[in-house]
Length: 121
Ligand SMILES: COc1ccc(C(=O)NC2CCC2)cc1-c1cc(C(C)=O)n2cccnc12
Image 1: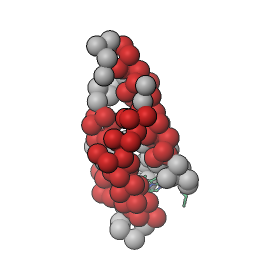
Image 2 (image 1 turned 60 degrees about the vertical axis):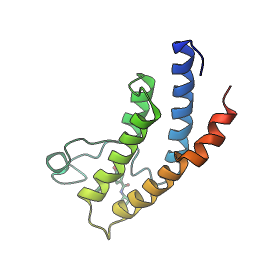
Image 3 (image 1 turned 90 degrees about the vertical axis):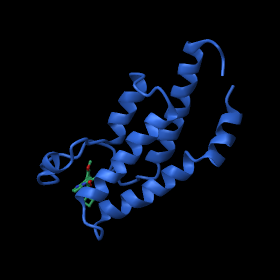
Image 4 (image 1 turned 180 degrees about the vertical axis):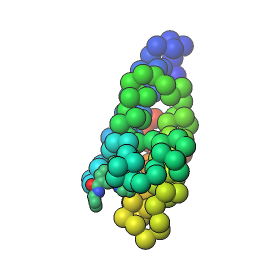
């Protein structure tokens, strides 16, 4: 924590980019890489009011739209919860979302974060 807001902003962006990469590695089939279209998922835009995907999250980090780690985690959870709302439990999308959500919450949980933060400059 420095009193220079600019430095803190960059550190937060570096942390979020690191976490995003770690989460994307958990999605090798790239099912969460891009926005879901109505073409591949009928009625998706009618059923899901706030769609979210990794590319949108990446753009938000770069546009400095996340003031905190919590705001980043909220969009990640939204992305997983959307998939568990739209898709039936027996689908690969629902199962992938459930696994991703658990992996993500472990990654951004207090224990792991302590290690991460201690490694920052
Ligand atoms: C960016 O979204 C996608 C991109 C690619 C694929 C895809 O490659 N699907 C093949 C793997 C088995 C068919 C699926 C999706 C996809 C994600 C989702 C989610 C995240 O709900 N989805 C739901 C219903 C149908 N397709 C999808």
